[in-house]
Length: 281
Image 1 (cartoon, rainbow, N blue to C red):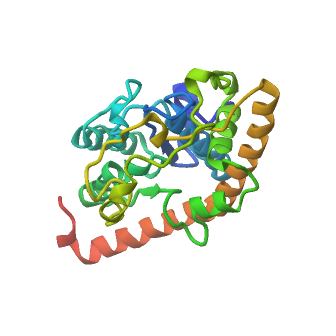
Image 2 (image 1 turned 90 degrees about the horizontal axis):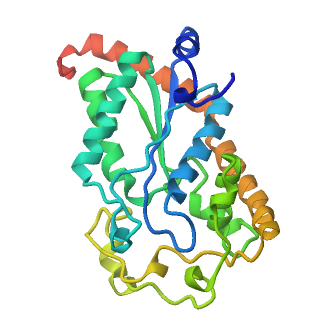
């Protein structure tokens, strides 16, 4: 295909795609303080993952979704904080539109910790209203035998998460958007414990920001960023980040994912015929 990004295709191209497939991957981003990196780091990360996933399973991508509930990073002047309920409502309308357009196999993906708070309700609401099983892939959570943090822990790097972000910018042709480290944005040299470590017990009672409201007390809380001293070093780190992203997407096994999504949908439709009272309409 000329491009995997739906908004860059013509209507004729999208229509032709829908003649043989119905897969759309929706990278859900966020705009928030992120150490010495640009505020759209996790949006770029989601979009790069979505691109690699779409290439692996012949899907399209609905991107440009950077403004949702951020969470504890609200202290940052770069953080755009959208309420949880508004985030749910917006994604729900997008999902409904995609269904009307013909995209029944929808896959939401993000690397933003609190995103489960507003993506999971959309997955359930679409199922209850349309009887269509859409999917949320959360790399921060356990997927098969692969865990995001386990992958990072196995990486031979000081800061594999920063490497992956650099790799994501590189995949999207935006590596120049990442600034080199200056005294003003040095969040690596003098690292210190998070200001919220005192609340580790209560914060860990549910998954990623779902247990208790919290606000970070220091920019370094989210998050320390590798010291980037030259464009050459940045490019080299991006290569390692791209390799980690490729490993992550390979672990997803996207052809099998979309195959099982079709099988689940077929199964659901049979059960809906047998048990019509399970359908909302």
